[in-house]
Length: 215
Image 1 (tube, rainbow, N blue to C red):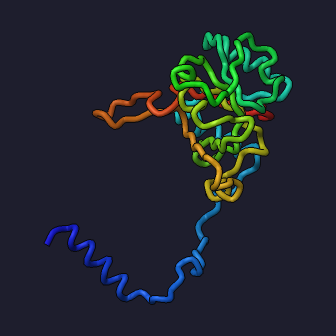
Image 2 (cartoon, rainbow, N blue to C red):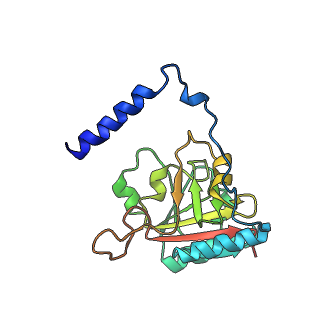
């Protein structure tokens, strides 16, 4: 008897003993796991987020609303970005000081056109301190998923403390599962081939995160 036969036999036995009128959806799932690993202030949560993002090789910056346009200008200039892709509802003043040509997220844009863009600047849905994860949900200040996967340089602005949560369970409570969620923990990378780390495989090679409101 093959392993496949063994597994299928076990499934048949389990199905045979199940109650025919059982409704799995009616069974309450226990949610007694930890909602967060320890207690921390909002400032401590922002510090933990920054530390974990840095551990994942993301570049972390801190500024306030007034300093954001100059910071974005410096980041784009340091990258040598001549073009920057912007979602439809990105606050206009964010890039008011930047010299780069703004390109809009258009349905007609091809992957080749997006690949030629130097940088993309977006907001986010929220960020998770314990895992160093940025979550995008395709909101108006984030644009469609592909504009943050194809360009090689992504600058993501996180509003602190409003968009920072401690843990994944807290994040799931605030996210809409029907939206196109993208979970980002550092720049795209893989070590699948001979354990050599290669960045930029499934997304941007460089991720810069701006903690807005955190000084």
